[in-house]
Image (cartoon, rainbow, N blue to C red; front, side, top):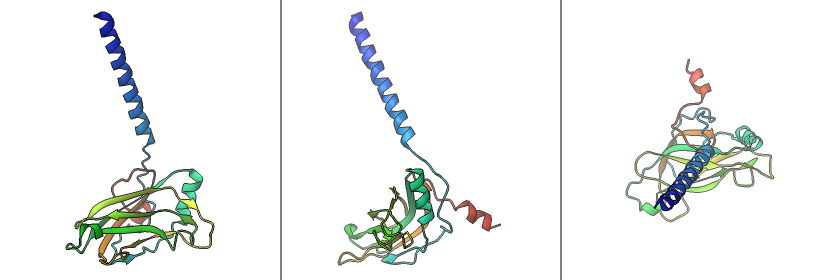
Length: 178
């Protein structure tokens, strides 16, 4: 009986230690930036099917590449066409002015959206492009199918790391208010 109990205790302790080590490693892998790098981010898009916020991300991307860290873009979005089929309720986000005609390539991703504002996020690692003659930005789109859907986006936040946090203005924006 004692040998069996000792064996079960040893297995239990080893499993607990392995779980704690895995949890600690996962905690260490989360990178939270917190500070909004996107200046004047308290904007709301028009009701649209295609919108490009006018913001050049070159400097932020350059710093991320040099520092070897990912960036997370988060935003609130909602579908305006509430009667649209669910399959058509999405926003396509991608690098602007194109994946090769910019300083940095960021992402090309589709975000399914709902009929009320909800927070969404995209984590990415910018890569240096072969065409450094242009700005780097993001654009949004929803016209690749027969049923185009209108949407609104607001409260952009771009931060270091791989964990999105609640929207806050950039510190420069708060100081500008005083």
